[in-house]
Length: 146
Image 1 (cartoon, helix red, strand yellow):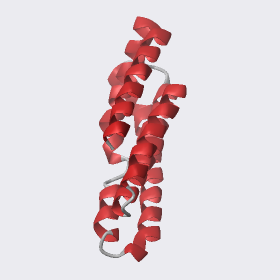
Image 2 (image 1 turned 180 degrees about the horizontal axis):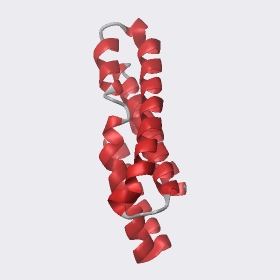
Image 3 (image 1 turned 90 degrees about the vertical axis):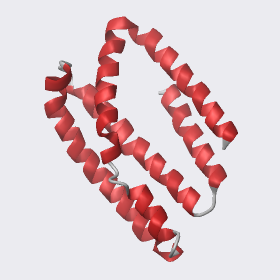
């Protein structure tokens, strides 16, 4: 877990440097503003589904498929709602007039990022901690490549 977290930090630093160099000052500011707004609503996209999975599946392992399905369904539905809200309210809040940036960042963080986080909770609940580190590392590596 320690090695995985250390590697994640390195990947996040590399991603930050590449995005800042690629976009330039003005575009990086636009990206950062949209990303900050997206990160503000991101915790609400799963509605605590990972924690609920841990709570109930640790007691009854046979309920894992049901809670995994509920977690995915909740996350997809809430991401759709949050994407719509950010497309409407995002430009008014941030002054960024491109709705596409809000769609892309909301899908990346509220859907794919949260599914990876919930999957990490699933692995921890089922006693597969090393998979948690690998999943987190893979998510950050894919973010860097994108």
